[in-house]
Amino acid sequence: MEEYLESLFVTLKAILLLILSTIRNIFPTGWLPRKDVKGQTVLITGSGSGLGRLMSFEFGKLGARIVLWDINEDGNLETLRELESRGVEKTMGRRVIFLNS
Ligand SMILES: NC(=O)c1ccc[n+]([C@@H]2O[C@H](COP(=O)([O-])OP(=O)(O)OC[C@H]3O[C@@H](n4cnc5c(N)ncnc54)[C@H](O)[C@@H]3O)[C@@H](O)[C@H]2O)c1
Image 1 (cartoon, helix red, strand yellow):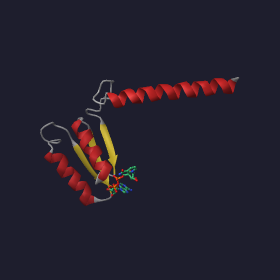
Image 2 (tube, helix red, strand yellow):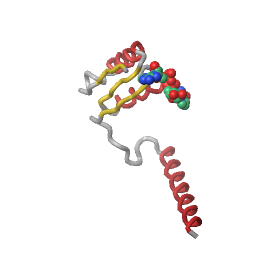
Image 3 (cartoon, protein in one colour):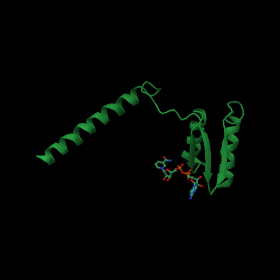
Image 4 (tube, rainbow, N blue to C red):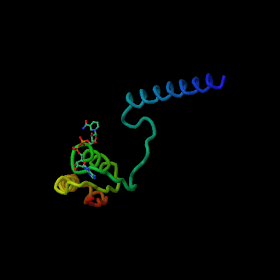
C-alpha cells in the first residue's frame, strides 16, 4: 500500500512538473513569476567562452553582479570587454568582478 501511494505521488508530481514546464515554454517571456537576480551576485564558472560567456551576457541584462571565473584569461578578458561594450558596467551601474582561477 505504501509503495502504491509513493508511486502515485511521484507520478502526479511528474505530471504537474510536465504541465508547468509546458506552460513555461509556451509563455517564455515572464508570464510566470521568475526569480529577480537584480543586484544578486552570480558566479559563472567557464565564463571565458561558450555557454558561460552567454550566461554572463544574460545575467548582465538582468542586472546581476557577475563574477567571471575561468582558467582561460584571454577568453575571460574578451567576455569582460564584451560586457563593457554592452554597457553592463557603465550605463546601468552594475559591477563586474573579474577573477581567474
Ligand atoms: N555547448 C553545448 O551545447 C553543451 C551541451 C551540453 C553540455 N555542455 C557542457 O557545458 C559545459 C560548457 O560547454 P561550452 O560549450 O560552453 O564549453 P567551452 O569549452 O566553450 O567553455 C568551457 C569554459 O570553461 C573553462 N574552464 C575549464 N576548466 C575550468 C576550471 N577548472 N575553472 C574555470 N574555468 C574552466 C574553459 O577555459 C572554457 O572557457 C561543458 O562541460 C560542456 O560539456 C555543453
